[in-house]
Length: 201
Length: 432
Ligand SMILES: Cc1cc2nc3c(=O)[nH]c(=O)nc-3n(C[C@H](O)[C@H](O)[C@H](O)COP(=O)(O)O)c2cc1C
Ligand code: FES
Image (cartoon, rainbow over the protein chains, first blue to last red):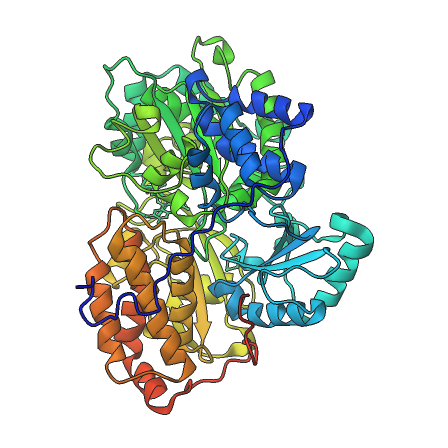
């Protein structure tokens, strides 16, 4: 008996997608990242180091680009929790990557306000230009295209976020070649970034 | 005539700095509040009529008064800067342009509830704001407005910024607390409410950024002044986010007697290419759509409830006549499917079915029974989940069917959308 009597449960619609993370190469925080983490832990009561798991995982990504099984075990050790606690977190939040990604991860917002302003066309143009499908990385390892949900910048639609941190706003399909070339030659400095309000109004 | 309060100075380049803030009277309300008893602060906020700006519109002073006074545990204030409701981008403006107003509000609120620590939970995607926020915090701490022994009063209150990592559900208050504890952002069963058992098992208040930014204003100008702005029980300045098919999308501050028509046509410049409006989402994707004949409703908590929707996060998304309602519903259900935290079966499984049915209709394979099936699945989600996410995800489906059933029927009968949308791709790309 399924949750809804008219729906065919288990006939192809619902399959577990659980995959365990690659162990990857041995991992330990660099001295600098470890010191940063210890500073962040002081923001919480001493017995609540677990609160810094998210911060620790960002540091893993800063160091290694994506999060491996070995990295999760290392985080568990330095935080003082189980590796399962860490995996639980990694697999929940969309900003943690468990697979290698390109130097530049282009995260195109696909939610309503951006979609109403042409986000579908931007994603299509970007994929065509880079010859990849969403979630794929270009052969040279430079770019990964991803679709993202509302970034909280709907007045500057469509919005592209790069590497979880940098914003590039008001994109049109014809702008994507410039975005890609700009990143290739000028790096992250070529992005429009989040606009100050004075420029918005 | 309404004068902006929260966004008065935002267009001035230095508005975010401590110097600018102090020069314009900033941190004076804090001095006043340090001389008041916690009860007097809470009472002032109650009398102001301030209601939460995060979505539910719960009276802020009342929420604070639920924090037990006599238990020895630490107490916490959490600021909800997760801002993830589609269409919402107002807290970003405050965080970017008026951070000290937020810090000042945090310290005053902490004093009211007896907290000595405050966490600003900021969504991971707002990382570009975090550096500036933390730099300004360092300055506020050095100037004695935040930290130990604030302005020599003996009151301690520290503020920390905590970065999320991409999860809409982290905006739900108990899920936010879970996330702050370093876990998946999944909601807790209530009761107990966070005011009694919250962060680390201690009494905790969760408030939205905009809510707390109103607190120094109430202390400065007085609760009566605040209560006189806008309609009764819907008092104070309010930020509205207008996006979608408008000429000038943006954040606009107004009193809550403003109408949808004024916000869309006067503030946001009307509809692109002067087209006709088809539907309006008034308070973020979780609120039912309204029709163009409802443009004169008042954008207040109570005005929008009376019109059959909600103020929510005051995120107005305007769709013009070329928008397919089936596609719009599917777009939003994709969001909810992606963001469902997976804890409650009806929400997790139901949203998948909603998506599959909408996708089937959109592909041209819809069948006559699909509309009733959608309604039936919604009926199995609404009111059957731990947090309001379940009710939120069915709103776009139920309200588009309610108002545009004929369009759904035509789509199913003919196998294609009755409207052509020039903003869509000829062939949307499929994720790999
Ligand atoms: C699924 C879901 C997402 C939410 N997202 C947010 C959010 O991004 N920001 C926010 O302030 N409140 C959000 N809320 C509302 C919070 O649960 C909570 O009511 C609010 O932060 C309380 O603050 P307030 O009383 O100041 O409005 C969300 C609620 C739900 C159910
Ligand atoms: S819909 Fe794209 S930023 Fe909100």
